[in-house]
Length: 345
Image 1: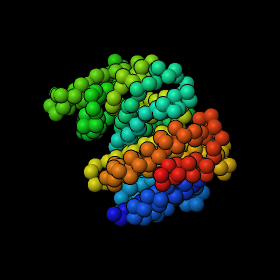
Image 2: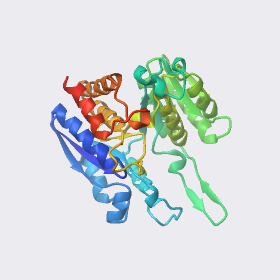
Image 3: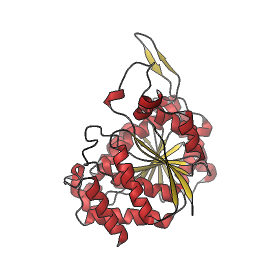
Image 4: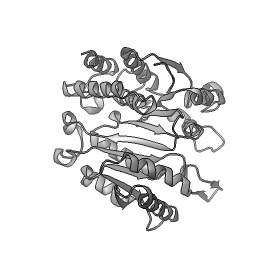
């Protein structure tokens, strides 16, 4: 097949792990065409904005978008009139209409000892956290004076219904919906709508509701309980990073952001741009590799090559591959070589 992939290396370690991932994908010989554009801080430095109209148009015209990371202290500011790299990411998500962020969490036995939790706690964990991505407090009305600031959290029934349907379709045994319905009106609507979708369309799937503070505790106390989780934007942002540490490193987690069928998905590692190690050759590329696997699976419908990448990463780790974030010394090049060797074998 032939598919056009827009690459957005972004900032920090982004260009390094993007180059490694292209090398990996080219080894599979899938006929992919790559087109690179700027996003984030480097776009601000070049064009004065974090996301240009041209970059967004290219992403919309692509079959899938593969993003590395954006941001860094160089562009940190509390001045609302100045652009921030994260604005480019939010604008891209909104422009592509990707409303669901999928983050699989599956600790590997070879890395159990890298997790801050005991082996018996994380054993058997295989969960998928689905975060609503284009609504909620991040996109609500914002006000600011010298002494008072506000951010509005708003959700419509339609926004909740579509994320609920995706969660129910994906769940194998149980869907857990996380909210704060004991306090927030937006969460009360969330719970009501999820119940409605469950009763009307997916009565055979088990459904449970958990308050977000309890969910944060249960993710640590008994993560293997969860199958598929759905939650709103800010809660999902926080809980997905918490869940990342079950694997021992946020450097191992991929993500997929999906919209309506037929629209290009956005695929990116969960970790940030790590500007403190940019250019040192020590960045862990594995989450980017696994994000490329999700791109092949969910974005291009290529299940076998996706599984091939995931299996190669698993085998490389089982054979002893360890980057600095998981207690080893392998740099980006060594990690890439180790996965490529498994891929070719």
